[in-house]
Amino acid sequence: MLYWFFVNGFGFIARHRLGPAVTGLENVPREGGAIIAANHLAVIDDALIPITCPRMVHFMGKAEYFEGKGLKGKFKKWWFTSVGVFPVDRSGGSKSLGALEHAREIIEDGHLFGIHIEGTRSPDGRLYKGHTGAAKLALETGCPIVPVAIIGSDKLQPVGTVIPKKGKTQVLYGKPIEVHKKAADEITHEDLRSLTDAVSKAIQKMSGQEYVDEYAQKVKARMKEEAAKAEAEGKAEQAEEAK
Picture 1 (cartoon, one colour):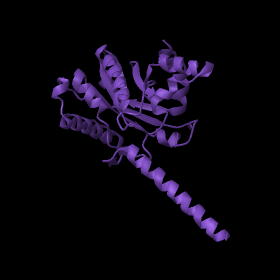
Picture 2 (cartoon, rainbow, N blue to C red):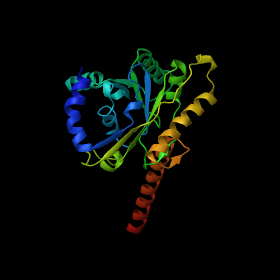
Picture 3 (cartoon, rainbow, N blue to C red):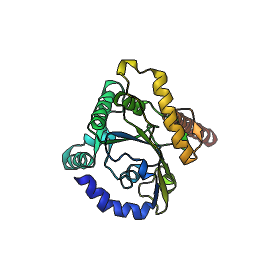
Picture 4 (cartoon, rainbow, N blue to C red):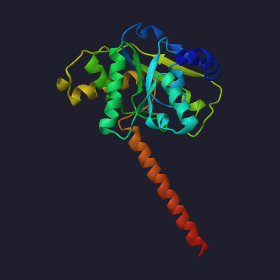
């Protein structure tokens, strides 16, 4: 499969450039389904886990990656599918639930499913409140969750950067959080929140990040609004001075 070609081929280059120091690989189950739940600091996080994990990890990818037209679009769809990425519609609702159903099938078939529980990259290096999708999958399947802390990737690839700088990173695999399977109709919001917070706490303990009890998406939206407001005010001042 192209996945292992990537890991063993391109992965050699990535390891040389990103310099990942890895600990805790003994915490990754040798067989059976499990969830690899990590923090998210940079785009290269999606390379750091595959090149350090001893087993193939399936990830979700934006639906747009699979919807391109022409030869380029077909190539992108083939590439992402080959390396274990499957599409998720991030508009929410039933479309997003479809991706979770596929993730559950992956776990039940005995494979690893990887997810960044913050749902998006951290805007400032802090660890933000986790979404409950991973907890829902774990409770419904009874699979363990392996918390993973990625350190330093944002220093090599700051927001807006395409090609990362050469440097050092760390990928820490924590002890699995064992989960007891529950019927879907018995899972409560408290169950989901409690398990998600336990995963976040485990990641935070390894990464040393400051924790923020707020979703990163909301913070990003607020930052975008504030930036737009500041830009508009700046233009208004310039127009006033030009009179």
